[in-house]
Image (cartoon, one colour):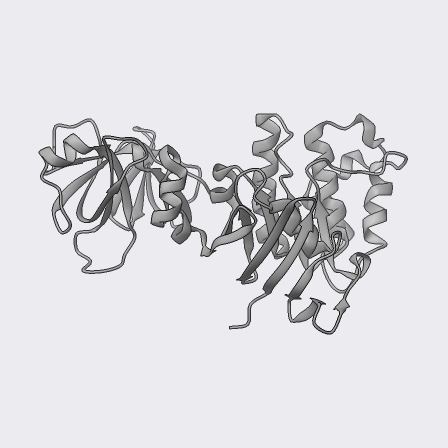
Length: 361
């Protein structure tokens, strides 16, 4: 299958040099890495705001190919760019800012009513943008970007300057935008919680290069990424809502390892949800413990034991007991002493006891 994005770009800003090579399908792709890893430089190169060498193909159209010296200027690239700061035009009202985006639209895409109603900005149209809150300004900036009818949305940490309630609201809105408008996104963040909530694919940048790219659930569970993240390491899995138990305020999910109980969810029965389980929230036992307060205990098989973040720690990589190879892994971070006491080794059957689960979507 032809990639939606085919990137092989190099660019330099001062002493920093970026060399990024990856492909991505038509989806929400998270560009993830620490500060200074090259995330913004990559977005600016894709948008044509910074000069870059190499080749860039977006949706089958060549935007940059330095071998024949061809490169579309920024104003001819069909992108919607949302910056960390909203960058609205201060002399125009909300309506004026949105009209500015619509006048620069290319091709097919969402119409005025779809965007204004879908993003909930219709009540602000006559307001000056200087009177908007940070969350409102980013919502208007997103609406303006969508009205350009772009082939791709570029989002450079749009929630990082917001307070926590506004940040949660914007991330929820971005999740809906991805589904409602079917616009591929390249979303920059240094926050892993944001990345795993929104991303389907990940481009992991380190020191100006691509360390890995591909499905996000595979990257966050990979040994290199887990070792880098340390105490924040964990896995992403897909589950399905099977029932709600109103009296107990619990929901039962069908997970790759068996029934999983979580606090009452608002998702309807039968819907798919994404879960994040941190390695520090998983303990191990050699047998099922019926008298435990932990409801979620799964029979698993030890795949490997890896060094932990700190001396005296071990990261245990687990696979479903009924699967000979492959399957959805689970990670447990335990002490080396506990690993010795349980006599853990590859192939050993254990019970994983999950203490906490984050339901992301």
